Image 1: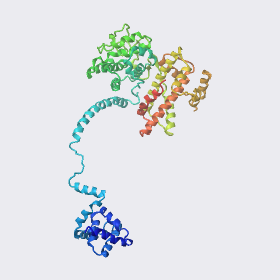
Image 2: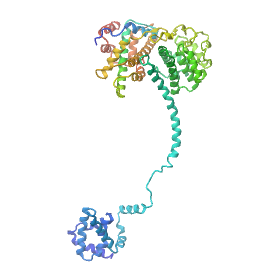
Image 3: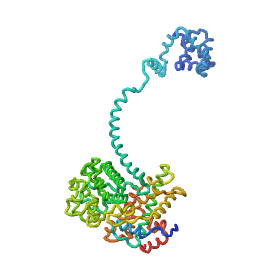
Image 4: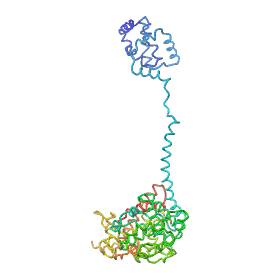
Length: 462
Length: 77
């Protein structure tokens, strides 16, 4: 039979004109699915003795291939039956096995393996358990700060709900790493003292809390501050950090220390919380051109542990009442330059860190500016409600505080007693509002009315 | 902008004077207020951007609060 195969082929080649694809059919047979291959098996070709039948079979082949698998189920079944009836089919196939393509090999392999191999499935039981444990740990670790965080935002919300228009108690912006600075050398502080923002921030806080004059709100503020300190994690020493934080709070609470003290006891705050009163005061004294004192302060700050009468306990040679203690007269602090606000005075009267009452910018002016610039962005009608206006006013009061301190630093550096136009120019330049392309005058032209421009020009001949 | 009186000059002077403990020269307050105008512009711009981002119609107090610190930092001399 094997010998007859080449014969059959040789015989068929003369008929190649009629069945041009006969050879390709044979070789390509292996790639066909089994049912289409069977009718064309070489064994069938061989068993067909007459060339006529062979021709017909070969003629049939290309069509079948062209059409693809059997067109009808009947055709399919007929072919299968024919294939099943063909004797010696297996032998022939085994003889031609060498012809198989890699695809066939792979398919056979797949068939052989199919019943054995399992579909790949991620085992659900094993995986979660080993992973869950580390995940839990991490989550626990992650959860701790997350638990802390709500406390940060909560008091703001509360205060907002309590009195929206009264006073927006936002956290005063911390302009620099205030608490890192406290750790630093005194020399650093004294060298940098004009720009000592930690002092500045605390004063800002103080101003604000004095303005509110509400105990609950104040306490929230305090907690806020301390949380913020913890969160930043700048200080290596936690206790000290908290001390300073609390000190910020106590110091600021003008006249409400007792209440705060009660809070400390109730909540089991660490007892050294209150005393650090001195730190801010020391900052003030730094400002008051007494640097020597500040060296003494940091070690002493944690040492006074009595909470309630903080007033008497100051270890300095100087006797000044702690600004926060109500028992002392709310008078002169730190070289007589700092006046303490009387809480009863209420929101309108703020006192600067130099003890000078700060007037508020009239709300109308602020509102006019705000609407003007809000409108430019958001279409024609931009409403600014009361709470927003209060927030803007707060922001602008902070702005004035910041700007004034900067200006004071510039004028002091220039050796002047007054804040000059040149100082403001310096400020504007440092804020990058004035540069090579923009001059003060162009800015003024953009923003100021004519009369003010004239005044400005008079003051500064170009 | 034809505003009769843009701002009370005395008040601005007093504010700055209180905060800096220094006197303010005669016309410096104009420049200070100019800077303040720029500050307000920046603040409101930031606030409106932020409020639009969060889909509010008007600028809310909270938005202003959130923006305040950033803007103040920008204006630190």
